[in-house]
Image 1 (cartoon, rainbow, N blue to C red):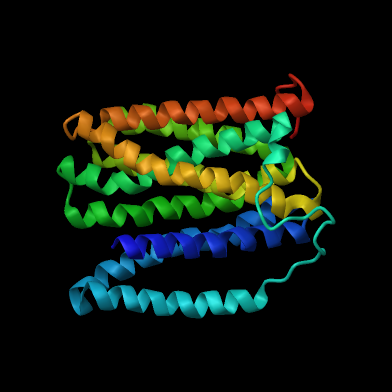
Image 2 (cartoon, helix red, strand yellow):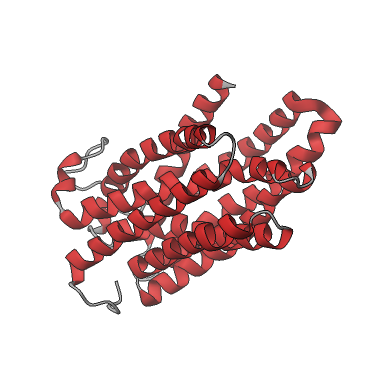
Length: 297
């Protein structure tokens, strides 16, 4: 399982990063909508694969269930690689490596911190919501299928995020989505997560907000650079962000263990880190446009 996890994470990063960066090359005015539409594939997979695996486990066992999903991914990724094209040649100062020098730009540095904290928090509910529901006494099958409900909310969030990001500003869209995640965690999950209605409302709100974050964060990065430099800026941010994805879930597990398996500490930590993300993203906006609260940016 350790080998599977390492290889899967490595392969997913090699696929996701250049694919999203390539979309940004083709759009400037409607980059948000284009990125949102492109990123909905992740949510659709998040609906289909958990349900498919759940059905396949009983029929063919774990090993062949994973192999079947792998064959499906092979076909889809092969087709995608044939369709992806870049529009612009590399910039003269382009480098295949993350460029930490651009972190000297305060707006870019704050945006990177905001996305880091966002991704740190984002994967905690995705990872722990099913085990949380089992502990709360929900049916095991329902606890597993709730991930499909969460990803259904994410589909809508990813598409709409791009549309209103283009009209009202990518940073505005991202900040509002982060605040919605704070509300979902602290005002819905924490007090009402033990009820069916509460947990369903939470996963829909969180799915919508997290889908927004995933699709619009690359657009925020694109607002801070020229199109030909987008890949370098994107790679630099998400190299840093990868460490957030690496440490967020284990830290969440330690918080859970420290509370004797009770989830309230985990939920509060998630909400508080999201608050830090909102502050950092808002700070990046202030650096770029000043203290204009309603500025479209």
